[in-house]
Amino acid sequence: MFKAKDQLINQINAWYMFRVFPSWGIKVLFGEARLASSSSVKVGDSVIETKNILIATGSKPKIPVIKGIEQGLKRGFVITSDEFFSLDSIPESILIVGGGAIGVELGTLLHKLGSRVIIVEVMDRLLPTFPDPELGDYLANRIMREMYGIDVRVKTSVTEVDPDNKLVRLSSGETVKVDKVLVAVGRVPNTEGLNLEDVGVEVKNGAVVVDNHARTNIPNIYAAGDVTGKYMLASVAKVQGIVAAENAAGLNSRIDYDLIPMVVFSDPEVASVGAVASKDDPRYIVTKMPNAINYRAIAYNKPYGWTKIVADRASKRIVGFHMAGPWASEIVNMAVIAIKKGLTLDEMKELVFSHPVFTELFIDAMELAIGSNVYLPKR
Image 1 (cartoon, rainbow, N blue to C red):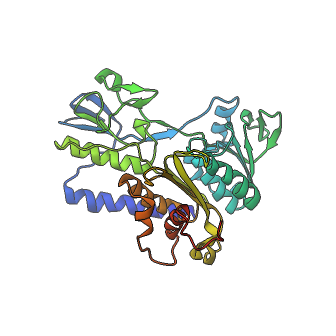
Image 2: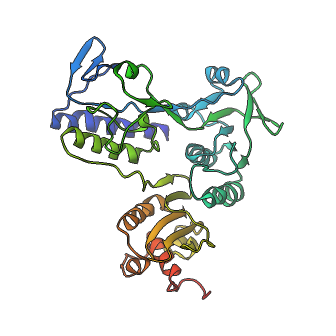
Image 3: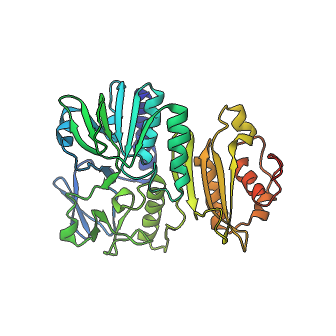
């Protein structure tokens, strides 16, 4: 699996280095770079004068303050998501610190590869940064615990790591023995060594501050991706990069941070975008439909999860979408378009989708919201 991963990365890198970049006349320099001024960058002994600068240095795993964790990292008992992809074997048992997207994704994968997995999350649910709490609760209870048998501990933290004896002490007072500890509590921007302060680039909470035009406080310096600390998603980084390049070229482009789809590539996948509301909120129509009625989900033996639609009651416009189920990562993108364009439940139900496909779940949920769904018994 890791060999295939390395081959894929090499293939993608080669495509850009030898095909895409040369075709556009893009020059690549390898070396440690830092800002020499607001219009120059130093790479090794070379100084490049330039009209515009884009900072896209990414992020690195966040290391929490836990007794023994630094020693554990040095000895290889503790790893981050970066080191995970360099493992030469799968641990028989592993404790994952953090129940966010990284912890859930790697926890699912490790379980499927045969590890005994424990996930420890300090907050009261998995996916604590997702607006809809039902997603994290469903994933923890119905999927992780019931379906997979993964040991999920919420409202729990790690107080100490003992690499000598391969032990982990929890806030509950329990001591757990595992082969590895995986730290997955998020990531922090790579801003060290860039000379940002001397040049005057504003940094807040370790991240380069940018506006909706991907521009820093210095007009000709832009930033994109994890280094900005905004969402830390590849999807956001891509659009930020496009916006930065277009503005550097004299256009007036911007990114809309109000409608960012959140996705977890677990099994089943989880996706969320837009407004969150409870069923008793008089302002909204909230409909949750079981995915078990979808013919393709049945055929693929994945008849679990649900699709939730949130619509404004007065206008019937779609304002939110939240899903746990197959292809949620794909279906959420349709919801982004529907919400952005202000489509209503009635307008969406008039659309003809191919059949049988997973994306019908989006239409089926809206039909259920207005009482025209024929796949479920009359309510």
